[in-house]
Structures are given as structure tokens and as C-alpha cells.
Image 1 (cartoon, rainbow, N blue to C red):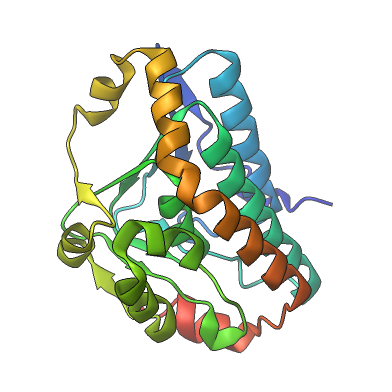
Image 2 (spheres, one colour):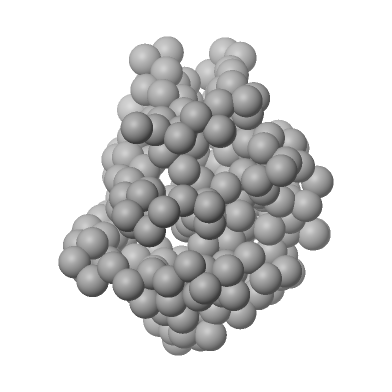
Length: 234
């Protein structure tokens, strides 16, 4: 049964050709559980049904974008959430909608990978990322980081799980500085050309994403202690 604790978050909303997926669970730092993923899937369905050009993913919290996996979930449920997250990344990549992650504060673990799945990640100066996984038994984020920043930088970020601030993220090519009008600029482009361009831009991550998901599904050893150390250390 889906965890309903995420339901009080603000609903997705949109105006014209731009929609929003809003995260606002302060006590839980926008942690990802089944309810979170249900709400994200509903938001994508709604945006596609209404023909939206852009979905902006953002948080109402001052210092957190998304803190990754919910550490209060039992092991089996957390494994299921981890696998479903890969399905969410795949859905975002396959969708004709353009996803813009508007990041202020921490994007950790699954939250950081949501930014990888987004077509554009724009950051405020206080944004930061951590791609935790290998320290607690999972190979994560290589599917998107190699294409985004290159093999050497991806290896550094994945293997050390170190914190990457906004300035470094921009320098590496992981993000772009926040620009208020960016979603509107995208929404004004030709829909058919935008869809073709997105297919070209995401071509390099499709197979690695599938392979990474399969590997983690077959070899789940994600310890709760490792998650706490690696994904939620500020």
C-alpha cells in the first residue's frame, strides 16, 4: 500500500503551457516514497494530457530540493521505491514534455538523480548535489552523469559521493545558473521540433539507465546506515 504521508505536499499546478511539480514536505525534507512517486506520475500524465511544454520541478523549502530516499521505510519498501525512481527517470526522459529542475538547497541521492533526468537543471547559488549509492551497495547516477560531465568527472562524483556546490555543478556542465524566464523561453519553441530535439538529447542515457536499473534491482544491498551517512549528511 502506498505511503500517504507525502499527500499534504502542494499539488502540481500549471498555467498555460508551463506546469509545476511542487515539493513542500518540510518535516521530511521532501523525501521520496511511494506517494511522492504516485504524485509525480500523476503530474506527468496531467502535463501530457494538457499538452504542456514544460514541467518545472521545485521545492518550497529554503534549503532542500529533495533529500532522496525516505529513511523511515522498511528495507523491502525502500528497495521498491528505489526501483520505481528509475521508472520515474525513464518516464521523464521518454515524455515529450521538457522538465526543468529549479534547484535551491540540497539535491541528494534520488533527488539528485531527478535533476539528471530533467532536461535542464538550473541552480541558485546555495544549491548542492550528492550522488550517494556506492557506499551502501548501489551503483547509481552513472547512467546520466557520464553524458552530462564526462567519464572522469562522473567517476569522481559517483565513487567519492562528495558534495558538489552550485558553482562546481555549473562548471562541470551538470547545471546552469537559474534564469527566471527559462521555462517561458522553452514554451515558445515549436512543439514538433522540441520533441525531436529532446529525443536526440536523451538518446545517450536510455541504455545506461536501463542497465543501471537492472543491476541495482538484481543486487540490492542498500543498508539504512549507509543511506544515512551518504545521502543525508549536510
